[in-house]
Image (cartoon, one colour):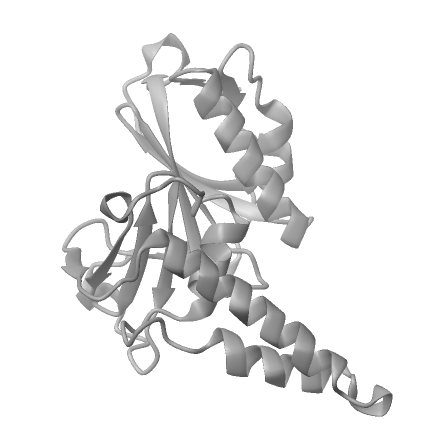
Length: 229
């Protein structure tokens, strides 16, 4: 088994926490791994949020025995989590699995431009908290006979699809960033940014990124530099 040597115990612990959160939303979650040099990107898609989450992990060295190759495959998130050894700061790479459709279309690697208007992290967290309270309030007001999945989904779409301060970034993307441990208290405005590239928007924090396709700009494919395999 290929062994990844992470930079330190903190990197291993953060990777394990990220995988655990993904599995909380989908026990059968898969993640796509891309590594080159001393950087590993772990892509996941928690179904509740309909976004692409990216956790960057620092490596002490590319691979065991110094193999000079890149890594790009989709694996079980659960098996990867089981292989993480926080004390040794290592993770074994499980056997590849047939990836879900999202794993074949990733955001472009370059061409990202900063977008203005993103509120400070504290304001973003406050927006999510207000959205959660609104969802609870509106669902609790429903008559029992109306409290079905269809009505709950309708309320959820109304709330979570709203834009953040006219930036085009939906509230659900910020909710995902907070739920996955990316939008942590203490981070300042200089640590968080919004970027765009083609049809994609990306909320970047020191702990990870959340990317989302903008509505009305689907199907642009390789013309935007997507990594498709």
